[in-house]
Length: 74
Image (cartoon, rainbow, N blue to C red; front, side, top):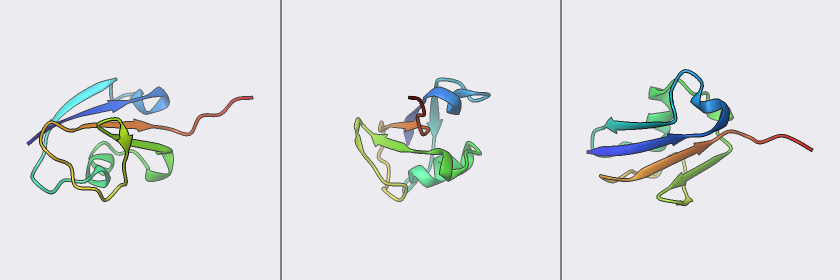
């Protein structure tokens, strides 16, 4: 199955803005984060098709996974 991964802010460094990945059935966001060598503690917001998601949700063909780091500022 094919999914689209959108990375934001510092997560793009060395990885790009948007990736299209072929992954096996049953793949989870945790699998993708590991594949991209992103430490889990660097993920503050995880969206699947624009809705809140969890690291262990199973992805479906054509899903869009968006990953955001913690945002600082003041």
